[in-house]
Length: 574
Image (cartoon, rainbow, N blue to C red):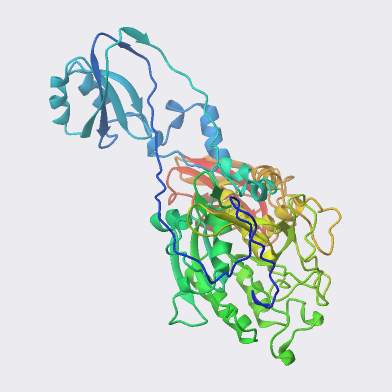
């Protein structure tokens, strides 16, 4: 089902003007604006200020000649701080080490008062009554540079100033309703906005994405990974159909104060697989090539607002019996993409009011999250296609706002609305990208099946799914809490495992009661903080010492596995 023949419901409403219809191909070029980003760093520390004095920041080169080491973090971190790092699987690293006391002594020996310190940035703020001494600072071999940062003339005792940390206030503008319906601000407020998640968008064209000011930050931050056209390699993908641009805007569009997408910091690979003017069976084959290209490029997630059921040549038409996820080539490829580690979302279709009212290809695939449409009140959109799949699996799985979704149109900060599962899908895809980022940060041992399970369970209809809404509208606050606190599906919490790390002998000793014998083919696997496997061995249930001499000091994730993870814990090697 192409954008045209799917009877995509596109109703455009200028938020600053009356409603009007428009031709997707008649877009004008945009005026440009830049989105500035500001990083504010404040040092708020005690000092005594006498008469006129001057502040300077000293950037140090290193942390040498220090008594502190990574092997003894308790010398400079509280137990609670160490436990928190272990909980989030964050290693203690060189940024946690205090500024070198030896360097500080050399500075104070010059008669310079150290006002405050930053161990994370490895810098010092000093306060001096006479700037002539700064020239001596610059000659010290461990000083990288010195920067003047201000003057004070007040006579006062400057105590510690405490300010409340304010939560980041995201101005979603017109996109607020569709994001808040998913409780998406929870992920954004926790710092998960899609950074380092690569998303492939398979569509019919991306008109003026190279010029539209709503995508300035995408281009300026080098998050536009590239383009690929499987319909006409000689064409300009930015001069083709506008549908992909609307889809993209729902995820990464950014008009300060007026619009913000669901994954504003993700990176995007734009792939054209759809010839919008025709409807033939070669198009789902183009789609197969597109998803394979996305896999080769290493994307984490793919979203596609395309679907196929009936064609211009009726002999090519799919039947409902074909909607089993195992017949159409595109559906088979979609499940393969999931099995290769790609989260794939596909719009369910806009045929809910038609004689053919079912989902299409590849939404029927087992590896696809098929996305239906709802209104802002959460009721199903009448046009949203129905499930289940022919083999009676829940389809669509989840829903997002596809009735009067907010999208970015053209210049002058104009935002419009459009309707269709084509827009519900990327809205949900962007939030899923943020969720994947959170899972990578919070649960390095997660599986994609587990993440899908959490998303389905967060749906408002999970206990009673329907043919048109599936599990309903996901709640990303609930899903986020699940990856924070829920163990992996098949972790055995009843295993009374005893661990002893012998750093002197470089041995890891593990003891498990000998009555546990159900894991006859188990293996011990240890992962680094980045998720890399650093040790594998056959697991002996009675008693064995494992050589850890090759492991550096730090925090590791230890698992005992047999057909999945059975036991896991974190170990600290010092």
